[in-house]
Amino acid sequence: MSAEGQERFQTLHELVKGAKIRLNANIWDYLVGATETETTMQRNRASLDAWAFRPRVLRDVSTVDCTGDFLGKRRIRLPVALAPVGSLDSFDPGGAATAGRAASAFGVPIIVSSVTEPGLEGSALANPDGPKIFQLYVRGGPDFIDSHIKRAMDSGYDAFAITVDTAHYSRRERDIAKRFVKHWRARSEGMNHQAALSWADIARVRAAHPNVKLILKGIGTGEDAGMAVEHGVDVVYVSNHGGRQLDHGRGSLAVLPEVVEAVGGRARVWMDGGISRGTDLVKAIILGAEMVGIGRLYCYGLAAAGQDGVRRVLELLEDEVQTCLGLLGASSFAATDRSMLHPVAPVTLPHVHSAFPLLAEPQRGY
Image (tube, rainbow, N blue to C red; front, side, top):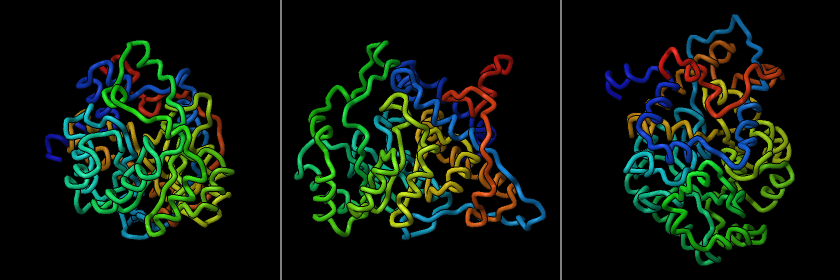
């Protein structure tokens, strides 16, 4: 990002503000909203706030390594992926192409949603060398799934993710109250195939594509995490869709420890859900996630300033992570452990933006 852009966005909350200024009310509510009472979304934040740090001192942290691992294939600049988000083109005309270029330039992967433009091949062409994963909503039978896997592998994606927590589309009342229907929802067909998806389908996919890195996104219990491992899944991805699917669910960070225990090192564990700060990311890694997805957070950057905005989000997140690790007394993620966390009562009421307190100060004009 240019010096002017860096001066404009020196904190993450400034990118949130920039996004709100640029987006119309319907798209803003789509971005920040969740299902029904929005309880699951709030619990994502509450579960992150329910841990405090126990820092160690007098350790050499003159150099802090914030890098992570991507599927054993390469080191990435942060253990972060841009999570799959539908309708990215609502925030920037380039959609996943713009976001993917930003991710690649910074050095982290993007997970491209099957319901965002410019589609599977177009998103890959825009980001030929960067790490990337394709994520599928199932809208057809076995041939539909197999075709998308082949197309993704032919296009250079590193792995293939199937979302499993969308058997029914939820009631997102911010949208319903405004009678707002997103363009991809208006033309969506075949959702009954997602509702009918079962473990037998996962077994078939694993058998038919043994060399493809397979991810199940939307795991919410240790029981299902164990079943995923039994079915040969490479990555168990803990997620509640940012609170957009089942209402009154648990926060993702609250789910993470039981999933890590159930997996027992037999697969990789990733998670998303409310990650808004570098400290959030560090907590998730300490509790057993190998990589963390960010969704709303990078969409703020995309809406505020396109490719430069996404990259600025990642730069600021990296700065926060480096500061957090250094003040914890850890020179890398590998130098952290569970003793550095302590359960506490949250100090603020959870909200989609409670990680950005300056947004709530009217005198600052936010």
